[in-house]
Length: 562
Image 1 (cartoon, one colour):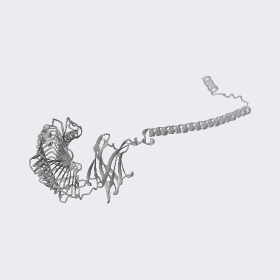
Image 2 (image 1 turned 60 degrees about the vertical axis):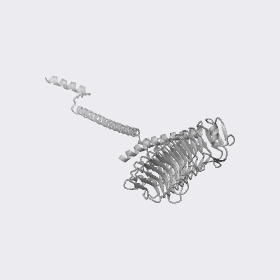
Image 3 (image 1 turned 180 degrees about the vertical axis):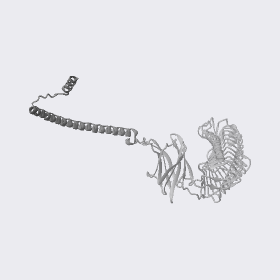
Protein backbone atom coordinates (compact mmCIF):
# COMPACT_ATOMS: atom_id res chain seq x y z
CA UNK A 1 0.00 0.00 0.00
CA UNK A 2 2.80 2.45 0.87
CA UNK A 3 4.50 1.81 -2.47
CA UNK A 4 1.26 2.52 -4.31
CA UNK A 5 0.73 5.78 -2.44
CA UNK A 6 4.28 6.88 -3.17
CA UNK A 7 3.83 5.87 -6.78
CA UNK A 8 0.63 7.89 -7.16
CA UNK A 9 2.25 10.95 -5.62
CA UNK A 10 5.34 10.69 -7.79
CA UNK A 11 3.36 10.20 -10.95
CA UNK A 12 1.17 13.18 -10.18
CA UNK A 13 4.05 15.46 -9.27
CA UNK A 14 6.33 14.46 -12.11
CA UNK A 15 3.72 14.39 -14.80
CA UNK A 16 1.87 17.53 -13.93
CA UNK A 17 4.90 19.62 -13.06
CA UNK A 18 7.87 18.38 -15.03
CA UNK A 19 6.13 16.73 -17.95
CA UNK A 20 3.24 19.01 -18.79
CA UNK A 21 4.79 22.35 -17.92
CA UNK A 22 8.20 21.65 -19.38
CA UNK A 23 6.88 20.21 -22.62
CA UNK A 24 4.24 22.89 -23.04
CA UNK A 25 6.61 25.77 -22.42
CA UNK A 26 9.54 24.31 -24.31
CA UNK A 27 7.56 23.39 -27.39
CA UNK A 28 5.81 26.72 -27.34
CA UNK A 29 9.22 28.34 -27.50
CA UNK A 30 10.27 25.93 -30.21
CA UNK A 31 7.23 26.58 -32.39
CA UNK A 32 7.47 30.30 -31.79
CA UNK A 33 11.10 30.29 -32.74
CA UNK A 34 10.64 28.30 -35.93
CA UNK A 35 7.23 29.46 -37.08
CA UNK A 36 6.14 32.65 -35.48
CA UNK A 37 8.94 34.59 -33.86
CA UNK A 38 9.89 38.08 -34.83
CA UNK A 39 13.28 36.71 -35.84
CA UNK A 40 13.42 35.50 -39.43
CA UNK A 41 16.18 34.73 -41.87
CA UNK A 42 14.36 36.64 -44.62
CA UNK A 43 12.46 39.40 -42.82
CA UNK A 44 15.05 41.92 -41.66
CA UNK A 45 16.02 45.52 -41.83
CA UNK A 46 19.01 45.16 -44.19
CA UNK A 47 20.70 42.37 -46.07
CA UNK A 48 24.48 42.22 -46.25
CA UNK A 49 26.34 39.87 -48.54
CA UNK A 50 29.72 38.28 -47.88
CA UNK A 51 32.07 38.58 -49.71
CA UNK A 52 30.11 40.95 -52.01
CA UNK A 53 29.77 43.79 -49.50
CA UNK A 54 32.48 42.76 -47.03
CA UNK A 55 35.23 40.27 -47.63
CA UNK A 56 35.05 38.67 -44.17
CA UNK A 57 32.15 37.57 -41.99
CA UNK A 58 33.49 39.50 -39.00
CA UNK A 59 33.78 42.70 -41.01
CA UNK A 60 30.14 42.30 -42.08
CA UNK A 61 29.06 41.80 -38.45
CA UNK A 62 31.01 44.84 -37.32
CA UNK A 63 29.27 47.01 -39.88
CA UNK A 64 25.76 45.51 -39.49
CA UNK A 65 22.92 47.07 -37.53
CA UNK A 66 20.59 45.31 -35.13
CA UNK A 67 18.25 42.82 -36.85
CA UNK A 68 20.15 42.84 -40.12
CA UNK A 69 20.67 39.63 -42.09
CA UNK A 70 24.14 38.61 -43.24
CA UNK A 71 24.10 36.14 -46.13
CA UNK A 72 27.40 34.31 -46.66
CA UNK A 73 28.12 32.76 -50.01
CA UNK A 74 29.71 29.31 -50.36
CA UNK A 75 33.43 29.22 -49.62
CA UNK A 76 35.86 28.63 -46.79
CA UNK A 77 36.35 31.46 -44.33
CA UNK A 78 39.31 31.14 -41.98
CA UNK A 79 38.05 33.25 -39.14
CA UNK A 80 37.12 33.38 -35.47
CA UNK A 81 33.73 35.08 -35.55
CA UNK A 82 32.15 36.98 -32.66
CA UNK A 83 28.42 37.67 -33.00
CA UNK A 84 27.58 40.44 -30.54
CA UNK A 85 24.48 41.91 -32.20
CA UNK A 86 20.88 40.84 -32.67
CA UNK A 87 21.11 39.61 -36.25
CA UNK A 88 20.80 36.60 -38.57
CA UNK A 89 23.91 34.94 -39.97
CA UNK A 90 22.98 32.57 -42.80
CA UNK A 91 25.21 30.41 -44.97
CA UNK A 92 24.39 29.67 -48.60
CA UNK A 93 24.96 25.93 -48.22
CA UNK A 94 26.03 24.21 -45.03
CA UNK A 95 28.23 21.76 -46.90
CA UNK A 96 30.08 24.45 -48.86
CA UNK A 97 29.90 27.48 -46.57
CA UNK A 98 32.70 26.76 -44.09
CA UNK A 99 34.11 28.68 -41.17
CA UNK A 100 37.46 27.18 -40.24
CA UNK A 101 39.34 27.97 -37.03
CA UNK A 102 42.70 26.58 -38.21
CA UNK A 103 42.83 24.30 -35.15
CA UNK A 104 42.57 26.97 -32.43
CA UNK A 105 40.12 29.06 -30.42
CA UNK A 106 36.38 29.55 -30.56
CA UNK A 107 35.30 29.51 -34.19
CA UNK A 108 31.89 31.21 -33.63
CA UNK A 109 31.15 32.98 -30.35
CA UNK A 110 27.56 34.13 -29.78
CA UNK A 111 27.39 36.82 -27.10
CA UNK A 112 24.07 38.48 -27.85
CA UNK A 113 20.40 37.56 -27.77
CA UNK A 114 17.94 36.78 -30.56
CA UNK A 115 20.65 35.43 -32.87
CA UNK A 116 19.94 33.12 -35.82
CA UNK A 117 22.90 31.04 -37.01
CA UNK A 118 22.11 28.73 -39.89
CA UNK A 119 23.65 26.92 -42.85
CA UNK A 120 27.35 26.61 -41.96
CA UNK A 121 30.03 24.02 -41.46
CA UNK A 122 32.04 25.13 -38.45
CA UNK A 123 35.25 23.23 -37.92
CA UNK A 124 38.80 22.94 -36.72
CA UNK A 125 38.64 25.00 -33.56
CA UNK A 126 39.05 24.28 -29.93
CA UNK A 127 35.33 25.06 -29.70
CA UNK A 128 32.99 25.26 -32.65
CA UNK A 129 29.95 27.32 -31.54
CA UNK A 130 29.77 28.91 -28.10
CA UNK A 131 26.61 30.56 -26.80
CA UNK A 132 27.65 32.59 -23.77
CA UNK A 133 24.72 34.09 -21.87
CA UNK A 134 22.55 34.08 -24.95
CA UNK A 135 18.76 34.09 -24.91
CA UNK A 136 16.15 33.36 -27.60
CA UNK A 137 18.73 32.43 -30.20
CA UNK A 138 18.28 29.83 -32.93
CA UNK A 139 20.99 27.47 -34.18
CA UNK A 140 19.66 25.41 -37.03
CA UNK A 141 21.03 23.40 -39.92
CA UNK A 142 24.74 23.65 -39.09
CA UNK A 143 27.50 21.06 -39.23
CA UNK A 144 29.95 21.36 -36.34
CA UNK A 145 32.79 18.91 -36.62
CA UNK A 146 36.43 18.12 -35.90
CA UNK A 147 36.80 20.56 -33.03
CA UNK A 148 39.25 19.66 -30.28
CA UNK A 149 36.90 20.02 -27.31
CA UNK A 150 33.36 21.20 -28.01
CA UNK A 151 31.14 21.17 -31.04
CA UNK A 152 28.32 23.32 -29.61
CA UNK A 153 28.46 24.66 -26.06
CA UNK A 154 25.59 26.50 -24.38
CA UNK A 155 26.80 28.25 -21.26
CA UNK A 156 24.45 30.23 -18.98
CA UNK A 157 22.05 30.46 -21.91
CA UNK A 158 18.28 30.12 -21.74
CA UNK A 159 15.27 29.84 -24.09
CA UNK A 160 17.33 28.88 -27.13
CA UNK A 161 16.50 26.44 -29.91
CA UNK A 162 19.03 24.05 -31.42
CA UNK A 163 17.56 22.07 -34.29
CA UNK A 164 18.84 20.06 -37.21
CA UNK A 165 22.54 20.46 -36.40
CA UNK A 166 25.22 17.79 -36.99
CA UNK A 167 27.85 17.62 -34.27
CA UNK A 168 30.46 14.98 -34.99
CA UNK A 169 34.06 14.09 -34.27
CA UNK A 170 34.36 16.42 -31.29
CA UNK A 171 35.07 15.56 -27.67
CA UNK A 172 31.67 16.96 -26.70
CA UNK A 173 29.18 17.03 -29.53
CA UNK A 174 26.60 19.28 -27.80
CA UNK A 175 27.18 20.49 -24.24
CA UNK A 176 24.45 22.29 -22.31
CA UNK A 177 26.07 23.67 -19.17
CA UNK A 178 24.26 25.70 -16.52
CA UNK A 179 21.61 26.47 -19.13
CA UNK A 180 17.84 26.15 -18.75
CA UNK A 181 14.65 26.08 -20.78
CA UNK A 182 16.31 25.23 -24.08
CA UNK A 183 14.98 23.00 -26.85
CA UNK A 184 17.29 20.57 -28.64
CA UNK A 185 15.45 18.91 -31.49
CA UNK A 186 16.48 16.80 -34.45
CA UNK A 187 20.22 17.13 -33.93
CA UNK A 188 22.73 14.44 -34.89
CA UNK A 189 25.61 13.91 -32.45
CA UNK A 190 27.89 11.09 -33.55
CA UNK A 191 31.45 9.90 -33.16
CA UNK A 192 32.10 12.07 -30.13
CA UNK A 193 33.22 11.10 -26.66
CA UNK A 194 30.01 12.68 -25.37
CA UNK A 195 27.16 13.02 -27.81
CA UNK A 196 24.67 15.26 -25.99
CA UNK A 197 25.67 16.23 -22.47
CA UNK A 198 23.54 18.21 -19.99
CA UNK A 199 25.53 19.50 -17.02
CA UNK A 200 23.71 21.25 -14.13
CA UNK A 201 20.88 22.23 -16.46
CA UNK A 202 17.13 22.13 -15.87
CA UNK A 203 13.85 22.32 -17.79
CA UNK A 204 15.34 21.49 -21.17
CA UNK A 205 13.59 19.44 -23.86
CA UNK A 206 15.60 16.96 -25.91
CA UNK A 207 13.49 15.54 -28.69
CA UNK A 208 14.24 13.54 -31.83
CA UNK A 209 18.02 13.78 -31.50
CA UNK A 210 20.26 10.96 -32.74
CA UNK A 211 23.26 10.20 -30.56
CA UNK A 212 25.20 7.31 -32.10
CA UNK A 213 28.69 5.87 -32.04
CA UNK A 214 29.76 7.86 -29.00
CA UNK A 215 31.16 6.74 -25.67
CA UNK A 216 28.17 8.44 -24.01
CA UNK A 217 25.16 8.94 -26.21
CA UNK A 218 22.96 11.18 -24.03
CA UNK A 219 24.27 12.09 -20.58
CA UNK A 220 22.30 13.95 -17.90
CA UNK A 221 24.63 15.00 -15.07
CA UNK A 222 23.24 16.87 -12.08
CA UNK A 223 20.41 17.96 -14.33
CA UNK A 224 16.74 17.89 -13.37
CA UNK A 225 13.27 18.38 -14.80
CA UNK A 226 14.40 17.68 -18.33
CA UNK A 227 12.41 15.75 -20.94
CA UNK A 228 14.03 13.42 -23.42
CA UNK A 229 12.83 11.45 -26.44
CA UNK A 230 15.77 10.46 -28.64
CA UNK A 231 17.71 7.77 -30.47
CA UNK A 232 20.86 6.40 -28.90
CA UNK A 233 22.61 3.53 -30.63
CA UNK A 234 26.04 1.92 -30.80
CA UNK A 235 27.33 3.78 -27.76
CA UNK A 236 28.97 2.47 -24.62
CA UNK A 237 26.16 4.16 -22.66
CA UNK A 238 23.07 4.89 -24.67
CA UNK A 239 21.30 7.09 -22.11
CA UNK A 240 23.05 7.80 -18.81
CA UNK A 241 21.28 9.58 -15.97
CA UNK A 242 23.84 10.46 -13.34
CA UNK A 243 23.02 12.26 -10.06
CA UNK A 244 19.95 13.68 -11.78
CA UNK A 245 16.40 13.72 -10.44
CA UNK A 246 12.87 14.46 -11.59
CA UNK A 247 13.49 13.95 -15.28
CA UNK A 248 10.95 12.44 -17.67
CA UNK A 249 12.44 10.03 -20.19
CA UNK A 250 9.88 8.95 -22.75
CA UNK A 251 9.90 7.75 -26.34
CA UNK A 252 13.65 7.05 -26.36
CA UNK A 253 15.17 4.29 -28.51
CA UNK A 254 18.33 2.79 -27.07
CA UNK A 255 19.75 -0.06 -29.12
CA UNK A 256 23.02 -1.85 -29.67
CA UNK A 257 24.71 -0.18 -26.72
CA UNK A 258 26.63 -1.81 -23.89
CA UNK A 259 24.18 -0.13 -21.51
CA UNK A 260 20.92 0.92 -23.06
CA UNK A 261 19.57 3.01 -20.15
CA UNK A 262 21.74 3.54 -17.08
CA UNK A 263 20.71 5.25 -13.82
CA UNK A 264 23.46 6.20 -11.37
CA UNK A 265 22.65 7.88 -8.03
CA UNK A 266 19.46 9.26 -9.57
CA UNK A 267 15.98 9.30 -8.08
CA UNK A 268 12.39 10.28 -8.76
CA UNK A 269 12.69 10.04 -12.53
CA UNK A 270 9.97 8.71 -14.81
CA UNK A 271 10.87 6.30 -17.59
CA UNK A 272 8.02 5.36 -19.92
CA UNK A 273 7.31 4.40 -23.51
CA UNK A 274 10.97 3.64 -24.29
CA UNK A 275 12.56 0.89 -26.38
CA UNK A 276 15.76 -0.69 -25.16
CA UNK A 277 16.72 -3.48 -27.52
CA UNK A 278 19.75 -5.52 -28.49
CA UNK A 279 21.92 -4.00 -25.79
CA UNK A 280 24.07 -5.89 -23.33
CA UNK A 281 21.96 -4.40 -20.52
CA UNK A 282 18.60 -2.97 -21.45
CA UNK A 283 18.36 -1.15 -18.12
CA UNK A 284 20.89 -0.85 -15.30
CA UNK A 285 20.21 0.89 -11.98
CA UNK A 286 22.98 1.71 -9.56
CA UNK A 287 22.13 3.33 -6.19
CA UNK A 288 18.98 4.86 -7.67
CA UNK A 289 15.66 4.86 -5.84
CA UNK A 290 12.03 5.80 -6.37
CA UNK A 291 12.21 5.89 -10.13
CA UNK A 292 8.97 5.00 -11.90
CA UNK A 293 9.52 2.67 -14.85
CA UNK A 294 6.56 1.38 -16.85
CA UNK A 295 5.24 0.97 -20.42
CA UNK A 296 8.75 0.31 -21.70
CA UNK A 297 9.93 -2.47 -23.99
CA UNK A 298 13.11 -4.38 -23.09
CA UNK A 299 13.74 -6.66 -26.03
CA UNK A 300 16.56 -9.09 -26.84
CA UNK A 301 19.09 -7.66 -24.42
CA UNK A 302 21.80 -10.21 -23.69
CA UNK A 303 22.09 -9.57 -19.94
CA UNK A 304 19.22 -9.53 -17.42
CA UNK A 305 18.30 -6.12 -16.04
CA UNK A 306 20.39 -5.12 -13.07
CA UNK A 307 19.31 -3.20 -9.97
CA UNK A 308 22.13 -2.58 -7.49
CA UNK A 309 21.10 -1.18 -4.10
CA UNK A 310 18.11 0.41 -5.76
CA UNK A 311 14.42 0.29 -4.92
CA UNK A 312 12.25 1.43 -7.81
CA UNK A 313 8.74 1.01 -9.18
CA UNK A 314 8.47 -1.08 -12.32
CA UNK A 315 4.75 -0.65 -12.86
CA UNK A 316 2.07 1.99 -12.37
CA UNK A 317 -0.13 -0.23 -10.23
CA UNK A 318 -1.98 -1.63 -13.24
CA UNK A 319 0.53 -2.21 -16.05
CA UNK A 320 4.27 -2.69 -16.14
CA UNK A 321 6.82 -3.27 -18.88
CA UNK A 322 7.40 -5.78 -21.64
CA UNK A 323 10.37 -8.07 -21.02
CA UNK A 324 11.14 -10.36 -23.93
CA UNK A 325 12.67 -12.95 -21.56
CA UNK A 326 9.55 -13.14 -19.36
CA UNK A 327 8.22 -16.71 -19.30
CA UNK A 328 5.08 -16.24 -17.23
CA UNK A 329 1.59 -17.21 -18.38
CA UNK A 330 -1.54 -15.17 -18.99
CA UNK A 331 -4.21 -17.62 -17.90
CA UNK A 332 -6.96 -15.04 -17.47
CA UNK A 333 -6.41 -13.50 -20.93
CA UNK A 334 -5.94 -9.84 -20.13
CA UNK A 335 -2.48 -9.10 -21.58
CA UNK A 336 -0.82 -9.00 -18.14
CA UNK A 337 1.43 -11.77 -16.84
CA UNK A 338 0.06 -13.82 -13.95
CA UNK A 339 3.33 -13.72 -12.00
CA UNK A 340 5.75 -10.80 -11.37
CA UNK A 341 8.96 -10.29 -13.31
CA UNK A 342 11.78 -10.36 -10.75
CA UNK A 343 14.81 -8.10 -11.05
CA UNK A 344 16.23 -8.73 -7.57
CA UNK A 345 15.06 -9.06 -4.00
CA UNK A 346 14.15 -5.34 -3.89
CA UNK A 347 12.55 -4.74 -7.26
CA UNK A 348 10.01 -6.50 -9.41
CA UNK A 349 7.52 -5.73 -12.13
CA UNK A 350 4.18 -6.78 -10.65
CA UNK A 351 2.25 -6.46 -13.91
CA UNK A 352 4.57 -7.49 -16.77
CA UNK A 353 3.11 -7.05 -20.23
CA UNK A 354 2.71 -10.13 -22.40
CA UNK A 355 3.38 -8.19 -25.62
CA UNK A 356 5.30 -5.05 -26.61
CA UNK A 357 3.77 -1.72 -25.66
CA UNK A 358 2.93 0.89 -28.31
CA UNK A 359 1.42 4.35 -28.09
CA UNK A 360 -0.46 5.97 -30.96
CA UNK A 361 -1.63 9.56 -31.29
CA UNK A 362 -4.71 10.21 -33.41
CA UNK A 363 -6.21 13.56 -34.33
CA UNK A 364 -9.93 14.20 -34.70
CA UNK A 365 -11.27 17.73 -35.22
CA UNK A 366 -7.98 19.32 -34.10
CA UNK A 367 -7.99 17.28 -30.90
CA UNK A 368 -5.25 14.74 -30.19
CA UNK A 369 -5.97 11.47 -28.38
CA UNK A 370 -3.52 8.82 -27.21
CA UNK A 371 -4.34 5.14 -27.60
CA UNK A 372 -2.16 2.58 -25.77
CA UNK A 373 -1.81 -0.90 -27.24
CA UNK A 374 -0.16 -4.06 -25.93
CA UNK A 375 0.09 -6.52 -28.80
CA UNK A 376 2.17 -9.48 -29.96
CA UNK A 377 1.57 -8.60 -33.62
CA UNK A 378 3.11 -5.97 -35.85
CA UNK A 379 0.77 -2.98 -35.98
CA UNK A 380 0.50 -0.69 -39.00
CA UNK A 381 -1.82 1.93 -40.52
CA UNK A 382 -3.19 2.98 -37.15
CA UNK A 383 -5.83 5.64 -37.72
CA UNK A 384 -9.11 7.03 -36.53
CA UNK A 385 -11.95 8.14 -38.78
CA UNK A 386 -15.56 9.23 -38.43
CA UNK A 387 -18.36 6.84 -39.27
CA UNK A 388 -21.24 9.01 -40.50
CA UNK A 389 -23.70 6.12 -40.46
CA UNK A 390 -23.08 5.36 -36.81
CA UNK A 391 -22.22 8.99 -36.02
CA UNK A 392 -19.17 8.02 -34.02
CA UNK A 393 -15.40 7.64 -34.37
CA UNK A 394 -13.82 4.39 -35.47
CA UNK A 395 -10.30 3.18 -34.65
CA UNK A 396 -8.89 0.79 -37.20
CA UNK A 397 -5.45 -0.68 -37.84
CA UNK A 398 -3.70 -3.67 -39.36
CA UNK A 399 -2.14 -6.49 -37.35
CA UNK A 400 0.24 -9.02 -38.81
CA UNK A 401 1.94 -12.09 -37.38
CA UNK A 402 3.12 -15.44 -38.59
CA UNK A 403 2.78 -17.97 -35.78
CA UNK A 404 0.27 -18.94 -33.12
CA UNK A 405 -2.49 -16.77 -31.76
CA UNK A 406 -2.40 -12.99 -31.85
CA UNK A 407 -3.83 -10.68 -29.21
CA UNK A 408 -4.33 -7.00 -28.49
CA UNK A 409 -4.94 -5.17 -25.24
CA UNK A 410 -6.05 -1.67 -26.21
CA UNK A 411 -6.90 1.31 -24.04
CA UNK A 412 -9.65 3.41 -25.65
CA UNK A 413 -10.31 6.96 -24.36
CA UNK A 414 -14.02 7.57 -23.86
CA UNK A 415 -13.56 11.09 -25.25
CA UNK A 416 -12.52 9.50 -28.54
CA UNK A 417 -15.09 6.68 -28.68
CA UNK A 418 -17.83 6.25 -26.13
CA UNK A 419 -18.56 2.80 -24.73
CA UNK A 420 -19.96 0.22 -25.31
CA UNK A 421 -17.67 -1.09 -28.03
CA UNK A 422 -17.77 -3.59 -30.85
CA UNK A 423 -14.49 -5.17 -31.98
CA UNK A 424 -14.23 -6.83 -35.38
CA UNK A 425 -11.45 -8.75 -37.11
CA UNK A 426 -11.89 -8.45 -40.87
CA UNK A 427 -15.51 -7.44 -40.12
CA UNK A 428 -16.08 -10.62 -38.09
CA UNK A 429 -16.12 -11.21 -34.33
CA UNK A 430 -12.73 -11.97 -32.68
CA UNK A 431 -11.93 -15.44 -31.38
CA UNK A 432 -12.19 -14.04 -27.87
CA UNK A 433 -13.25 -10.61 -26.70
CA UNK A 434 -13.39 -9.19 -23.19
CA UNK A 435 -13.57 -5.83 -21.42
CA UNK A 436 -10.64 -5.99 -19.02
CA UNK A 437 -11.52 -2.93 -16.99
CA UNK A 438 -12.79 0.65 -17.13
CA UNK A 439 -12.05 3.62 -14.92
CA UNK A 440 -14.65 6.11 -16.08
CA UNK A 441 -12.44 7.83 -18.69
CA UNK A 442 -10.82 4.84 -20.44
CA UNK A 443 -11.76 1.26 -21.22
CA UNK A 444 -9.28 -1.58 -21.71
CA UNK A 445 -10.32 -4.18 -24.28
CA UNK A 446 -8.66 -7.54 -24.92
CA UNK A 447 -9.26 -9.70 -27.99
CA UNK A 448 -7.57 -12.54 -29.88
CA UNK A 449 -7.31 -13.82 -33.45
CA UNK A 450 -5.32 -16.30 -35.52
CA UNK A 451 -2.02 -14.84 -36.62
CA UNK A 452 -1.94 -13.53 -40.17
CA UNK A 453 -2.74 -10.12 -41.60
CA UNK A 454 -6.05 -8.71 -40.34
CA UNK A 455 -7.90 -5.44 -40.20
CA UNK A 456 -9.04 -4.53 -36.69
CA UNK A 457 -11.93 -2.13 -36.15
CA UNK A 458 -13.19 -0.74 -32.86
CA UNK A 459 -16.46 1.15 -32.99
CA UNK A 460 -19.05 2.44 -30.58
CA UNK A 461 -22.12 0.20 -30.42
CA UNK A 462 -25.12 2.35 -29.51
CA UNK A 463 -27.02 1.12 -26.49
CA UNK A 464 -30.31 -0.41 -27.69
CA UNK A 465 -33.48 0.87 -26.07
CA UNK A 466 -34.33 -1.09 -22.95
CA UNK A 467 -36.22 -4.25 -23.85
CA UNK A 468 -39.83 -4.08 -22.74
CA UNK A 469 -40.73 -6.99 -20.48
CA UNK A 470 -43.35 -9.44 -21.74
CA UNK A 471 -46.85 -8.34 -20.75
CA UNK A 472 -47.42 -11.64 -18.99
CA UNK A 473 -44.57 -10.83 -16.61
CA UNK A 474 -46.13 -7.56 -15.41
CA UNK A 475 -48.03 -7.35 -12.10
CA UNK A 476 -51.05 -5.71 -13.67
CA UNK A 477 -51.49 -8.64 -16.04
CA UNK A 478 -51.79 -11.14 -13.23
CA UNK A 479 -54.03 -8.77 -11.28
CA UNK A 480 -56.44 -8.70 -14.19
CA UNK A 481 -56.27 -12.48 -14.50
CA UNK A 482 -57.03 -12.88 -10.78
CA UNK A 483 -59.96 -10.49 -10.98
CA UNK A 484 -61.25 -12.27 -14.05
CA UNK A 485 -61.04 -15.63 -12.28
CA UNK A 486 -62.92 -14.20 -9.30
CA UNK A 487 -65.63 -12.80 -11.59
CA UNK A 488 -65.93 -16.12 -13.44
CA UNK A 489 -66.16 -18.03 -10.17
CA UNK A 490 -68.78 -15.67 -8.82
CA UNK A 491 -70.76 -15.81 -12.04
CA UNK A 492 -70.50 -19.58 -12.01
CA UNK A 493 -71.73 -19.71 -8.41
CA UNK A 494 -74.54 -17.30 -9.18
CA UNK A 495 -75.67 -19.36 -12.16
CA UNK A 496 -75.55 -22.55 -10.13
CA UNK A 497 -77.49 -20.89 -7.29
CA UNK A 498 -80.10 -19.58 -9.72
CA UNK A 499 -80.47 -23.01 -11.28
CA UNK A 500 -80.82 -24.59 -7.83
CA UNK A 501 -83.51 -22.08 -6.85
CA UNK A 502 -85.33 -22.66 -10.10
CA UNK A 503 -85.14 -26.42 -9.57
CA UNK A 504 -86.41 -25.98 -6.00
CA UNK A 505 -89.26 -23.79 -7.17
CA UNK A 506 -90.21 -26.34 -9.80
CA UNK A 507 -90.14 -29.14 -7.24
CA UNK A 508 -92.15 -27.06 -4.76
CA UNK A 509 -94.75 -26.20 -7.37
CA UNK A 510 -94.96 -29.89 -8.28
CA UNK A 511 -95.40 -30.80 -4.63
CA UNK A 512 -98.09 -28.15 -4.08
CA UNK A 513 -99.86 -29.29 -7.20
CA UNK A 514 -99.88 -32.88 -5.96
CA UNK A 515 -100.92 -31.81 -2.46
CA UNK A 516 -103.82 -29.76 -3.88
CA UNK A 517 -104.88 -32.64 -6.04
CA UNK A 518 -104.81 -35.02 -3.08
CA UNK A 519 -106.68 -32.51 -0.91
CA UNK A 520 -109.35 -32.05 -3.54
CA UNK A 521 -109.64 -35.80 -3.94
CA UNK A 522 -109.94 -36.22 -0.17
CA UNK A 523 -112.54 -33.44 0.09
CA UNK A 524 -114.54 -35.04 -2.68
CA UNK A 525 -114.29 -38.43 -1.04
CA UNK A 526 -115.38 -37.02 2.33
CA UNK A 527 -118.34 -35.27 0.81
CA UNK A 528 -119.39 -38.48 -0.83
CA UNK A 529 -119.29 -40.28 2.50
CA UNK A 530 -121.30 -37.49 4.20
CA UNK A 531 -124.02 -37.70 1.56
CA UNK A 532 -124.07 -41.45 1.97
CA UNK A 533 -124.36 -40.99 5.78
CA UNK A 534 -127.26 -38.55 5.32
CA UNK A 535 -129.18 -40.91 3.18
CA UNK A 536 -128.53 -43.87 5.39
CA UNK A 537 -129.51 -42.23 8.67
CA UNK A 538 -131.74 -39.50 7.30
CA UNK A 539 -129.82 -36.80 9.04
CA UNK A 540 -128.86 -33.28 8.01
CA UNK A 541 -125.19 -32.60 8.43
CA UNK A 542 -123.77 -29.14 7.74
CA UNK A 543 -120.13 -28.96 6.95
CA UNK A 544 -117.89 -25.95 7.30
CA UNK A 545 -116.90 -24.74 3.96
CA UNK A 546 -113.94 -22.78 5.37
CA UNK A 547 -111.71 -22.88 8.37
CA UNK A 548 -113.29 -19.63 9.53
CA UNK A 549 -116.79 -21.26 9.54
CA UNK A 550 -115.29 -24.14 11.51
CA UNK A 551 -114.01 -21.87 14.30
CA UNK A 552 -117.29 -19.90 14.44
CA UNK A 553 -119.33 -23.07 14.99
CA UNK A 554 -116.84 -24.34 17.51
CA UNK A 555 -117.16 -21.12 19.49
CA UNK A 556 -121.00 -21.33 19.35
CA UNK A 557 -121.12 -24.86 20.70
CA UNK A 558 -118.78 -23.85 23.49
CA UNK A 559 -121.16 -21.09 24.60
CA UNK A 560 -124.22 -23.37 24.50
CA UNK A 561 -122.60 -25.81 26.90
CA UNK A 562 -122.02 -23.14 29.44
